[in-house]
Length: 377
Image (cartoon, helix red, strand yellow):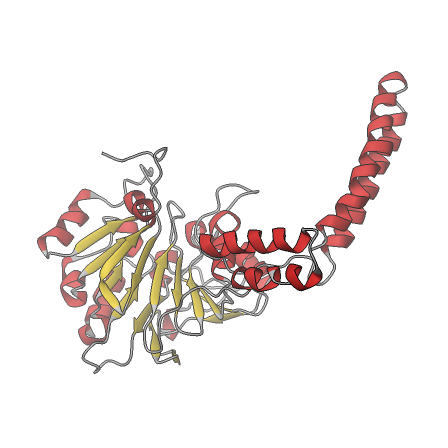
Protein backbone atom coordinates (compact mmCIF):
# COMPACT_ATOMS: atom_id res chain seq x y z
CA UNK A 1 0.00 0.00 0.00
CA UNK A 2 2.98 2.34 0.48
CA UNK A 3 4.72 1.32 -2.75
CA UNK A 4 3.70 4.41 -4.73
CA UNK A 5 4.89 6.86 -2.07
CA UNK A 6 8.10 4.87 -1.52
CA UNK A 7 8.93 5.01 -5.22
CA UNK A 8 8.20 8.74 -5.38
CA UNK A 9 11.01 9.14 -2.84
CA UNK A 10 13.36 6.37 -3.97
CA UNK A 11 13.50 6.93 -7.72
CA UNK A 12 14.63 10.59 -7.72
CA UNK A 13 16.95 9.96 -4.75
CA UNK A 14 18.75 7.16 -6.57
CA UNK A 15 18.73 9.07 -9.89
CA UNK A 16 19.85 12.47 -8.62
CA UNK A 17 21.94 11.60 -5.54
CA UNK A 18 23.15 7.99 -5.33
CA UNK A 19 24.08 7.44 -8.98
CA UNK A 20 26.04 10.71 -9.44
CA UNK A 21 27.95 10.15 -6.20
CA UNK A 22 28.76 6.58 -7.18
CA UNK A 23 30.09 7.72 -10.58
CA UNK A 24 32.09 10.61 -9.12
CA UNK A 25 33.68 8.12 -6.72
CA UNK A 26 35.51 6.64 -9.71
CA UNK A 27 37.42 9.93 -9.96
CA UNK A 28 37.74 10.63 -6.24
CA UNK A 29 37.29 7.55 -4.01
CA UNK A 30 36.24 9.35 -0.77
CA UNK A 31 33.00 10.38 -2.51
CA UNK A 32 31.95 6.74 -2.30
CA UNK A 33 31.53 7.35 1.43
CA UNK A 34 28.83 9.91 0.59
CA UNK A 35 27.20 7.42 -1.77
CA UNK A 36 27.15 4.87 1.05
CA UNK A 37 25.54 7.44 3.35
CA UNK A 38 22.91 8.16 0.68
CA UNK A 39 22.09 4.45 0.33
CA UNK A 40 21.83 4.00 4.11
CA UNK A 41 19.56 7.05 4.38
CA UNK A 42 17.29 5.63 1.67
CA UNK A 43 17.24 2.25 3.40
CA UNK A 44 16.23 3.87 6.70
CA UNK A 45 13.47 5.82 4.94
CA UNK A 46 12.08 2.72 3.23
CA UNK A 47 12.10 0.84 6.53
CA UNK A 48 9.93 3.59 8.02
CA UNK A 49 7.48 3.16 5.15
CA UNK A 50 7.44 -0.62 5.68
CA UNK A 51 6.74 -0.16 9.41
CA UNK A 52 3.60 1.88 8.82
CA UNK A 53 0.46 -0.01 9.94
CA UNK A 54 -1.31 -1.56 6.94
CA UNK A 55 1.76 -0.94 4.76
CA UNK A 56 1.07 -4.35 3.23
CA UNK A 57 -2.40 -5.63 2.40
CA UNK A 58 -2.77 -9.36 1.79
CA UNK A 59 -5.96 -10.82 0.36
CA UNK A 60 -6.88 -14.35 -0.62
CA UNK A 61 -5.90 -15.40 -4.13
CA UNK A 62 -9.04 -15.01 -6.26
CA UNK A 63 -9.81 -17.18 -9.32
CA UNK A 64 -8.81 -15.89 -12.79
CA UNK A 65 -12.30 -14.64 -13.65
CA UNK A 66 -12.27 -12.35 -10.60
CA UNK A 67 -8.85 -11.00 -11.58
CA UNK A 68 -10.03 -10.25 -15.10
CA UNK A 69 -13.14 -8.51 -13.76
CA UNK A 70 -10.96 -6.39 -11.46
CA UNK A 71 -8.71 -5.33 -14.34
CA UNK A 72 -11.78 -4.38 -16.36
CA UNK A 73 -13.12 -2.44 -13.37
CA UNK A 74 -9.83 -0.55 -13.06
CA UNK A 75 -9.92 0.36 -16.75
CA UNK A 76 -13.49 1.67 -16.44
CA UNK A 77 -12.49 3.79 -13.43
CA UNK A 78 -9.73 5.64 -15.31
CA UNK A 79 -11.55 6.18 -18.60
CA UNK A 80 -12.62 9.71 -19.48
CA UNK A 81 -16.27 9.02 -18.80
CA UNK A 82 -18.89 10.64 -16.56
CA UNK A 83 -18.46 9.57 -12.95
CA UNK A 84 -21.85 7.88 -13.02
CA UNK A 85 -20.37 5.42 -15.53
CA UNK A 86 -16.86 5.24 -14.11
CA UNK A 87 -18.17 4.16 -10.70
CA UNK A 88 -19.54 1.03 -12.34
CA UNK A 89 -15.96 -0.23 -12.23
CA UNK A 90 -16.11 -0.54 -8.44
CA UNK A 91 -18.48 -3.55 -8.31
CA UNK A 92 -16.31 -5.28 -10.91
CA UNK A 93 -13.37 -5.08 -8.49
CA UNK A 94 -15.24 -6.36 -5.43
CA UNK A 95 -15.05 -10.13 -6.23
CA UNK A 96 -11.23 -9.99 -6.17
CA UNK A 97 -11.02 -7.75 -3.08
CA UNK A 98 -13.59 -9.73 -1.07
CA UNK A 99 -12.79 -13.24 -2.26
CA UNK A 100 -12.67 -15.94 0.41
CA UNK A 101 -11.07 -19.30 -0.32
CA UNK A 102 -13.59 -22.18 -0.09
CA UNK A 103 -13.50 -23.97 3.26
CA UNK A 104 -14.75 -27.34 4.50
CA UNK A 105 -18.29 -27.37 5.92
CA UNK A 106 -18.92 -27.63 9.65
CA UNK A 107 -17.91 -31.06 10.93
CA UNK A 108 -15.38 -31.65 8.14
CA UNK A 109 -11.69 -30.85 7.70
CA UNK A 110 -9.05 -30.55 5.01
CA UNK A 111 -5.42 -31.71 5.01
CA UNK A 112 -2.98 -29.89 2.77
CA UNK A 113 0.48 -31.47 2.77
CA UNK A 114 2.67 -28.70 1.33
CA UNK A 115 5.34 -29.36 -1.28
CA UNK A 116 8.35 -28.53 0.89
CA UNK A 117 10.81 -31.29 -0.01
CA UNK A 118 12.36 -33.38 2.76
CA UNK A 119 10.33 -32.61 5.87
CA UNK A 120 6.80 -32.27 7.21
CA UNK A 121 4.42 -29.35 6.82
CA UNK A 122 0.66 -29.93 6.87
CA UNK A 123 -2.07 -27.29 6.98
CA UNK A 124 -5.30 -28.47 8.61
CA UNK A 125 -8.37 -26.34 7.85
CA UNK A 126 -11.86 -26.54 9.33
CA UNK A 127 -14.87 -24.31 8.67
CA UNK A 128 -13.43 -21.40 10.70
CA UNK A 129 -10.03 -22.47 12.03
CA UNK A 130 -6.59 -23.55 10.86
CA UNK A 131 -3.67 -25.48 12.32
CA UNK A 132 -0.16 -25.87 10.89
CA UNK A 133 1.49 -29.17 11.79
CA UNK A 134 5.26 -28.71 11.35
CA UNK A 135 6.79 -26.05 9.12
CA UNK A 136 9.21 -27.88 6.85
CA UNK A 137 12.99 -27.63 6.48
CA UNK A 138 15.51 -24.82 6.59
CA UNK A 139 17.49 -24.79 3.35
CA UNK A 140 20.10 -22.20 4.39
CA UNK A 141 20.51 -19.23 6.72
CA UNK A 142 18.55 -17.09 4.26
CA UNK A 143 15.99 -19.59 2.98
CA UNK A 144 13.46 -21.98 4.52
CA UNK A 145 10.14 -23.63 3.75
CA UNK A 146 8.30 -21.00 5.78
CA UNK A 147 9.41 -18.07 3.60
CA UNK A 148 9.36 -19.95 0.31
CA UNK A 149 6.22 -22.10 0.64
CA UNK A 150 4.07 -21.79 3.76
CA UNK A 151 3.80 -18.00 4.09
CA UNK A 152 2.81 -17.50 0.42
CA UNK A 153 0.41 -20.45 0.68
CA UNK A 154 -1.27 -19.10 3.81
CA UNK A 155 -1.55 -15.67 2.19
CA UNK A 156 -3.12 -17.22 -0.91
CA UNK A 157 -5.80 -18.74 1.33
CA UNK A 158 -6.16 -15.53 3.36
CA UNK A 159 -5.65 -17.81 6.35
CA UNK A 160 -5.44 -16.83 10.01
CA UNK A 161 -3.69 -19.68 11.85
CA UNK A 162 -4.95 -20.52 15.34
CA UNK A 163 -2.28 -23.08 16.27
CA UNK A 164 1.15 -24.12 15.08
CA UNK A 165 2.13 -27.58 16.31
CA UNK A 166 5.80 -28.50 15.89
CA UNK A 167 6.17 -32.24 16.39
CA UNK A 168 9.83 -32.08 17.54
CA UNK A 169 12.95 -30.00 17.14
CA UNK A 170 14.54 -31.53 14.00
CA UNK A 171 15.27 -28.83 11.44
CA UNK A 172 13.18 -30.50 8.70
CA UNK A 173 10.14 -29.98 10.94
CA UNK A 174 10.79 -26.56 12.51
CA UNK A 175 12.91 -24.89 9.82
CA UNK A 176 10.13 -22.59 8.61
CA UNK A 177 8.64 -21.82 12.02
CA UNK A 178 10.14 -18.35 12.48
CA UNK A 179 8.65 -17.12 9.20
CA UNK A 180 5.21 -18.55 9.96
CA UNK A 181 5.17 -17.18 13.50
CA UNK A 182 6.24 -13.73 12.29
CA UNK A 183 3.37 -13.76 9.79
CA UNK A 184 0.88 -15.06 12.36
CA UNK A 185 1.48 -13.08 15.60
CA UNK A 186 -1.75 -14.35 17.17
CA UNK A 187 -1.10 -18.07 16.80
CA UNK A 188 -0.55 -20.47 19.72
CA UNK A 189 2.58 -22.61 19.60
CA UNK A 190 2.45 -26.23 20.78
CA UNK A 191 5.53 -28.44 20.66
CA UNK A 192 7.83 -30.88 22.42
CA UNK A 193 10.91 -28.70 21.82
CA UNK A 194 13.27 -28.28 24.76
CA UNK A 195 13.29 -25.25 27.04
CA UNK A 196 16.51 -23.85 25.56
CA UNK A 197 15.35 -23.92 21.94
CA UNK A 198 15.51 -20.59 20.05
CA UNK A 199 11.76 -20.65 19.37
CA UNK A 200 11.12 -20.42 23.12
CA UNK A 201 12.37 -16.82 22.90
CA UNK A 202 9.99 -16.00 20.05
CA UNK A 203 6.69 -17.36 21.34
CA UNK A 204 5.62 -19.05 24.58
CA UNK A 205 5.47 -22.79 23.93
CA UNK A 206 2.82 -25.12 25.31
CA UNK A 207 4.03 -28.70 25.62
CA UNK A 208 2.13 -31.31 23.63
CA UNK A 209 1.01 -34.01 26.05
CA UNK A 210 -1.14 -37.08 25.47
CA UNK A 211 -4.68 -36.34 26.59
CA UNK A 212 -4.87 -32.77 25.27
CA UNK A 213 -8.05 -32.36 23.23
CA UNK A 214 -10.11 -29.61 21.65
CA UNK A 215 -12.91 -29.23 19.10
CA UNK A 216 -13.15 -26.76 16.22
CA UNK A 217 -16.33 -26.54 14.15
CA UNK A 218 -17.36 -30.07 15.06
CA UNK A 219 -13.89 -31.50 14.33
CA UNK A 220 -12.06 -33.13 17.25
CA UNK A 221 -8.30 -32.89 17.80
CA UNK A 222 -6.51 -35.29 20.18
CA UNK A 223 -2.83 -35.43 21.14
CA UNK A 224 -1.81 -39.08 21.56
CA UNK A 225 1.93 -38.77 22.24
CA UNK A 226 4.21 -38.03 24.11
CA UNK A 227 3.09 -38.60 27.68
CA UNK A 228 3.90 -36.13 30.43
CA UNK A 229 6.43 -38.55 31.92
CA UNK A 230 8.40 -38.61 28.67
CA UNK A 231 9.72 -35.10 29.29
CA UNK A 232 12.98 -35.46 31.18
CA UNK A 233 13.93 -33.37 34.17
CA UNK A 234 16.33 -30.49 33.24
CA UNK A 235 19.92 -31.43 34.04
CA UNK A 236 19.55 -35.15 33.37
CA UNK A 237 21.87 -36.65 30.77
CA UNK A 238 19.50 -39.33 29.47
CA UNK A 239 17.65 -36.99 27.15
CA UNK A 240 15.12 -38.79 24.95
CA UNK A 241 15.82 -38.98 21.23
CA UNK A 242 14.14 -36.15 19.36
CA UNK A 243 12.11 -38.46 17.12
CA UNK A 244 10.75 -40.25 20.15
CA UNK A 245 9.23 -36.99 21.42
CA UNK A 246 7.22 -36.30 18.25
CA UNK A 247 3.75 -34.90 18.91
CA UNK A 248 1.20 -37.30 17.44
CA UNK A 249 -2.11 -35.66 16.50
CA UNK A 250 -5.38 -37.43 15.74
CA UNK A 251 -8.08 -35.48 13.87
CA UNK A 252 -11.65 -36.75 13.58
CA UNK A 253 -14.52 -35.27 11.60
CA UNK A 254 -17.90 -35.10 13.38
CA UNK A 255 -17.31 -37.53 16.25
CA UNK A 256 -16.02 -41.07 16.60
CA UNK A 257 -19.41 -42.78 16.39
CA UNK A 258 -20.74 -40.86 13.41
CA UNK A 259 -21.19 -43.26 10.46
CA UNK A 260 -19.37 -40.90 8.08
CA UNK A 261 -16.56 -39.90 10.47
CA UNK A 262 -13.11 -39.69 8.89
CA UNK A 263 -9.90 -39.82 10.93
CA UNK A 264 -6.41 -38.57 10.09
CA UNK A 265 -3.28 -39.41 12.09
CA UNK A 266 -0.25 -37.11 11.92
CA UNK A 267 2.64 -39.08 13.37
CA UNK A 268 5.74 -36.89 13.04
CA UNK A 269 8.95 -38.94 13.23
CA UNK A 270 7.92 -41.57 15.77
CA UNK A 271 9.78 -44.86 15.48
CA UNK A 272 8.95 -48.48 16.20
CA UNK A 273 9.17 -48.15 20.01
CA UNK A 274 6.68 -45.28 20.10
CA UNK A 275 4.45 -47.04 17.56
CA UNK A 276 4.33 -50.07 19.86
CA UNK A 277 3.14 -47.87 22.74
CA UNK A 278 0.38 -46.43 20.59
CA UNK A 279 -0.70 -49.88 19.39
CA UNK A 280 -1.68 -50.69 22.98
CA UNK A 281 -4.72 -48.48 22.38
CA UNK A 282 -5.59 -49.62 18.86
CA UNK A 283 -9.03 -47.97 18.81
CA UNK A 284 -7.48 -44.55 19.37
CA UNK A 285 -5.01 -44.78 16.48
CA UNK A 286 -7.22 -46.35 13.82
CA UNK A 287 -7.35 -43.84 10.99
CA UNK A 288 -8.43 -43.42 7.39
CA UNK A 289 -5.44 -41.23 6.46
CA UNK A 290 -1.92 -41.57 7.86
CA UNK A 291 0.94 -39.13 7.50
CA UNK A 292 3.66 -41.75 7.07
CA UNK A 293 5.91 -41.68 10.16
CA UNK A 294 9.48 -40.43 9.64
CA UNK A 295 8.96 -39.95 5.88
CA UNK A 296 9.00 -43.72 5.30
CA UNK A 297 12.19 -44.50 7.23
CA UNK A 298 13.13 -48.12 7.94
CA UNK A 299 12.86 -47.35 11.68
CA UNK A 300 9.12 -46.65 11.45
CA UNK A 301 5.87 -47.99 9.96
CA UNK A 302 6.18 -51.29 11.78
CA UNK A 303 3.79 -54.07 10.66
CA UNK A 304 1.87 -54.08 13.96
CA UNK A 305 1.44 -50.31 13.77
CA UNK A 306 0.10 -50.41 10.22
CA UNK A 307 -2.27 -53.22 11.17
CA UNK A 308 -3.59 -51.20 14.10
CA UNK A 309 -3.97 -47.94 12.18
CA UNK A 310 -5.29 -49.74 9.09
CA UNK A 311 -5.41 -46.61 6.92
CA UNK A 312 -6.91 -46.50 3.46
CA UNK A 313 -4.53 -43.72 2.38
CA UNK A 314 -0.95 -42.83 3.39
CA UNK A 315 0.70 -39.49 2.61
CA UNK A 316 4.50 -39.37 2.32
CA UNK A 317 6.33 -36.06 2.60
CA UNK A 318 9.85 -36.69 1.36
CA UNK A 319 12.23 -34.85 -0.94
CA UNK A 320 12.82 -35.99 -4.51
CA UNK A 321 15.96 -38.19 -4.56
CA UNK A 322 16.65 -37.29 -0.92
CA UNK A 323 19.93 -38.53 0.59
CA UNK A 324 18.13 -40.77 3.11
CA UNK A 325 16.36 -42.81 0.43
CA UNK A 326 12.95 -42.06 1.99
CA UNK A 327 10.56 -43.75 1.62
CA UNK A 328 12.62 -46.94 1.68
CA UNK A 329 11.38 -49.83 -0.51
CA UNK A 330 10.85 -52.40 2.31
CA UNK A 331 8.54 -49.97 4.11
CA UNK A 332 6.59 -49.21 0.94
CA UNK A 333 6.20 -52.95 0.43
CA UNK A 334 4.49 -53.18 3.84
CA UNK A 335 1.95 -50.61 2.70
CA UNK A 336 1.36 -52.39 -0.63
CA UNK A 337 0.88 -55.74 1.11
CA UNK A 338 -1.97 -54.21 3.12
CA UNK A 339 -3.62 -52.53 0.14
CA UNK A 340 -2.86 -49.02 1.45
CA UNK A 341 -2.72 -46.36 -1.25
CA UNK A 342 0.51 -44.34 -0.90
CA UNK A 343 0.80 -40.81 -2.29
CA UNK A 344 4.36 -39.45 -2.39
CA UNK A 345 4.99 -35.69 -2.47
CA UNK A 346 8.02 -36.24 -4.72
CA UNK A 347 5.58 -37.18 -7.48
CA UNK A 348 2.40 -35.49 -6.32
CA UNK A 349 3.71 -32.14 -5.13
CA UNK A 350 1.18 -30.54 -2.80
CA UNK A 351 -1.23 -33.23 -1.54
CA UNK A 352 -4.78 -32.17 -0.63
CA UNK A 353 -7.37 -34.42 1.02
CA UNK A 354 -10.81 -33.55 2.44
CA UNK A 355 -12.86 -35.58 4.87
CA UNK A 356 -16.08 -34.85 2.92
CA UNK A 357 -14.49 -36.33 -0.23
CA UNK A 358 -12.41 -39.11 1.34
CA UNK A 359 -11.82 -41.04 -1.88
CA UNK A 360 -10.06 -38.14 -3.62
CA UNK A 361 -6.51 -36.84 -3.29
CA UNK A 362 -5.59 -33.79 -5.34
CA UNK A 363 -2.00 -33.62 -6.58
CA UNK A 364 -0.93 -30.09 -7.46
CA UNK A 365 1.54 -31.32 -10.08
CA UNK A 366 -1.35 -32.97 -11.91
CA UNK A 367 -3.99 -30.29 -11.30
CA UNK A 368 -1.58 -27.47 -12.20
CA UNK A 369 0.54 -29.30 -14.77
CA UNK A 370 2.57 -27.20 -17.21
CA UNK A 371 4.47 -28.39 -20.28
CA UNK A 372 7.81 -27.26 -18.85
CA UNK A 373 7.46 -29.37 -15.68
CA UNK A 374 9.68 -32.43 -15.31
CA UNK A 375 7.73 -35.68 -15.56
CA UNK A 376 9.05 -38.45 -13.33
CA UNK A 377 9.33 -41.88 -14.99
